[in-house]
Amino acid sequence: MGVVEKVFESLKEIPESSVIALEANSDAYFDVIRAITEKISIYKNLDVIYINSTLPANSIISVMDLLDIKRDNIYFVDCGSSVLLTQQTKNGHVLFVESPTMLENIMLKVEFLLRKLDRKKGKLVFLDSINSLAIHNSLSILSEFMHILFNNMRSKGAYTVVLSIKEQSSDDISRALTMVCDEKIDVKEEW
Amino acid sequence: MPEQKQSKVFSLPKKGQRNRCKTGIDTLDAILNGGIPRGNTVLVTGSCGTGKTTTSLEFLVHGALYGENCLFISVTEASEKLLANLIPYEFFDESLLKRGKLIFIDMPAIYERLGLQKSEFSFEEIDLLVNAIGDIVKELKIKRLVIDSVTSVCFQLKTEEKIRDFILKLGKKLSDLGCTSLLVSEILPSDARYSTYGVEEAIADGIILMGNYERRGDLLRTLQVVKMRGTTHSRAKYVLDLTPIGVLLVPMLKGGGD
Ligand SMILES: Nc1ncnc2c1ncn2[C@@H]1O[C@H](COP(=O)(O)OP(=O)(O)OP(=O)(O)O)[C@@H](O)[C@H]1O
Ligand SMILES: [Mg+2]
Image 1 (tube, each protein chain N blue to C red):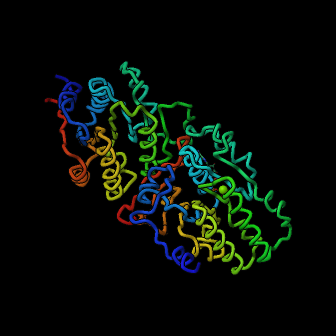
Image 2: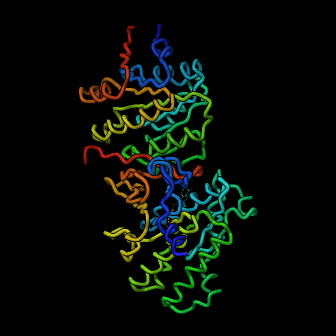
Image 3: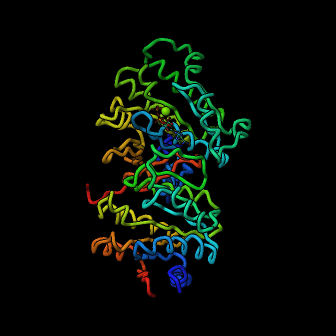
């Protein structure tokens, strides 16, 4: 079984309000994205709120188009684009946050989407990744951010998945994830 | 007769929580444990561009949608301009204007009607103004009032005594009429006080402080309820976003004090 299926299998039975950390190698990056945005979201019929700080949303969108992944139910909170450099196209599916240090603004955009999108449809928040946010933020403020955001998602019955890239991680980041997540899933190449 | 008078003076408010005036801004209502206690006069204070007018307008639109008569008295900006700002809001319903649920009046028009043209009002003229506002509120059965800004009115009062007199009398009148009021107050970012003259803040039943907060080069809009008589409330700072679906608020992160 490939990584996509493995991730899907390990996530498909999780209950609502779960907060899951996925620890993966950078090689598995696009497989994880595929498992979340395509497999899980279709299986559970979810809107995905994709918080990206690793790559600009446009790059992720290009990859998704290349992989033929439908994007109708994917909404980006983009803090991976330099706002000054991108011409912000009017696109209801991408909301920009000026800088990955504006963690409150990430929460505000997520809140905006939660109110804007069909309330009857389930939601999954995908944070890609804790490591790229950790470049710009202290771990204490990042932990506080995750704590507030994830609890808010829990209270709304949404699923939360946080990605941690092993090569960019540290013991401190791993401990922070343990604090805020219900479960950690180790994504191995040779599952 | 004196007996009757006494019983009125000493009549206690009903048991339990005071009736709340829901702002309709969910997180703000949560911060206030349900809303602004009805009849309170609240100072919405902050430096320029912090969202005072937008937030106050939203308070009125929600009130009008709940079926309450709402009045915006504009001192500095023309009503047409304010109205234009309302149109993009998804929850705004133009019929509120036609049905008289949401009313805009320009303060200069009130001054003119009262013949107030001097640059400094006398105590008698303050009474005149307070009574005129009271009459409008009574006549139109207004339940929510915004004066934007009270600072501009205070320019014409000049002295602390007159400002105190004006705010006290206005607050009393509005509260007696069961009208919940937001008085917009402009301060400089450097101001240590919550109001230009320092007296408004002591007299008001509540203070909602709006500000700009700079953290490592990022500028955040913030909101904090500093005081609110008649309810317990959070005093924490929140970060604010002005969006087409209204004001959104999230707690400001502390980050272990960095
Ligand atoms: N719906 C909205 N979406 C985005 N930005 C908005 C929205 N409404 C208002 N703004 C912006 O917010 C800014 C401040 O709004 P507002 O006029 O409410 O502040 P204020 O505190 O009343 O300012 P002033 O001191 O100038 O009266 C405005 O400059 C406007 O550009
Ligand atoms: Mg204003």
